[in-house]
Length: 109
Image (cartoon, rainbow, N blue to C red; front, side, top):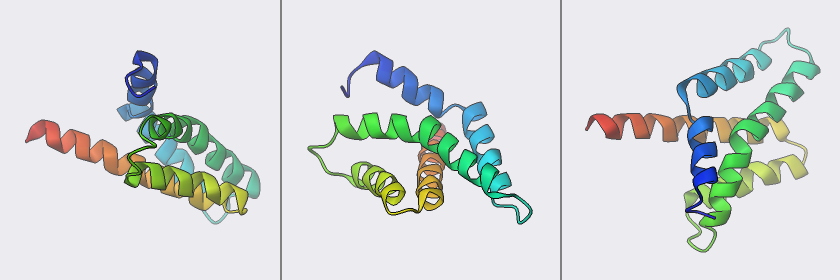
């Protein structure tokens, strides 16, 4: 699963500049005080679909290593089961943004 070309394409598509920007703007807009619950739930679900599914598939490929990626993904999906979907989406978004920045900076080094 970890070496799959489809998985690599899905992860790279999820970490593209456009997708990261669009998901971040949608999530931040859902935090605005005048936003109702509908945009808040929609933004959380978009983050889980766009960033969570690739993270989950990537984590399943590395489950025997039990690294920070596996634990973060497990915590994000567990937050849904305890009723804190928005916090799990924030965790996924922040972790994806940090990975994206790390990749960009390591390419320049």
